[in-house]
Image 1 (cartoon, rainbow, N blue to C red):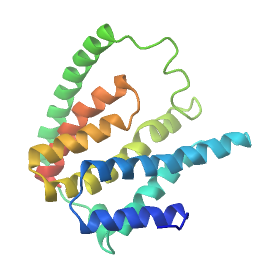
Image 2: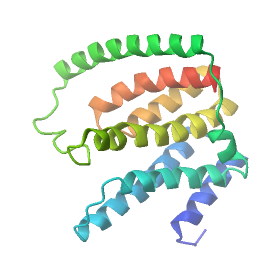
Image 3: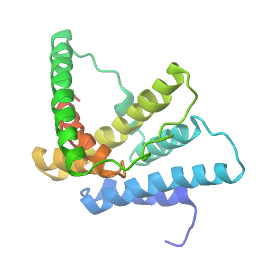
Image 4: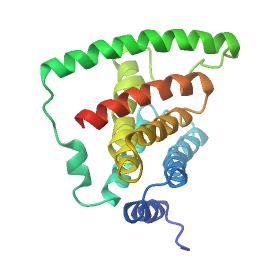
Length: 204
């Protein structure tokens, strides 16, 4: 394939994923390619000293939606369809989530004892002004929605087609961790990815 258009390359990669079973290598390539376009956009914006705010998150969401669209006409509709979850199930998941947060916190403490975070590593890590609303939107809601669509709605679903449920959950969780690009977030994201993958498996 000689066409250098990045969108067309993503469509080509997505089409191969749609035809063949999703392998870990293909999933990694898709993650890197999608993230690469986002980081390229951030680099270009920084060259012109442009304040980008939520723009990288918007670009990431657009790329994920492009990937979803490339997998079929009904893929976006399937991903974005609202599903009613019984209150009892939602309450149970919420309790489990808080329990997971306690476990994650303790495991993260152990990790930082063995591998301390370098001084200043997370300084200016989150974009946005000091406004609490913008921090929540930029740091949690926007990326959280996009990541769930990508890692659970797209990747995990296709891993389930080609692998056992256990492998599918572990593969998607491992990718979710690795794509945070640092060990302190990656380990926590891996645990969270297992939990979210299990929820997706049972409740879609």
